[in-house]
Length: 265
Image (tube, rainbow, N blue to C red):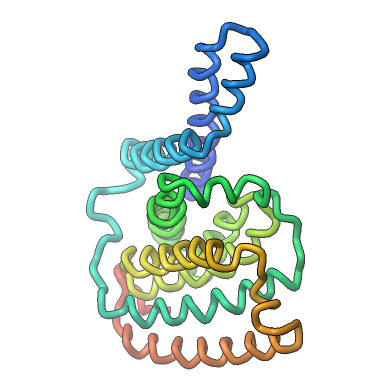
């Protein structure tokens, strides 16, 4: 458990430290005049600056995990390409159900004001859709779940703890329920296949889909697109059934021993 908490702390710390350093560097160029102070403030919140900070935070997170021997160069990189397409179909079904539930909960969205600017910046989009998912899988699936399993925790306990930590680091209430649900599936996929490729591909799919939906339906929720709450619940039920069927097929596809030397869950 200690290693899992440390890995999560490293991830959060880098998200805070790198922007703080960026703010300090930009502030050093200001003379103190109101005009320059305003320019520096605008620069700190500029999407490109945020994108650069995200990129450095991700790189430093992985570097720190390597430096502290929580991660080895080949860990979790087994290829299970044949499992990816079906895993993505399961992910699509889960995304639909999770987002409908999230909209019904109506939790406050702390990122609503800043997100549009980030979504129109190429570097931020790359970080959100590609680098972020990969690094998060390294931290929350490879290191957190891996360390818990190696510490003797049962697979479902390890997956649940990883999902809770994954939801907690999102901070934004509107993202937490979806993060927990999606994180649980990603964790299960990792334990089931013993490959980081499978959950990483599904996580990238989830975030890419989020970017696409933002640009194609920026002001429309999933429930509104479906036609209302009653219809949305029916769609959620249908996707749930489809997901269960796909899950059973996936279990048969990956019916072997996982990388941890235990029978797959």
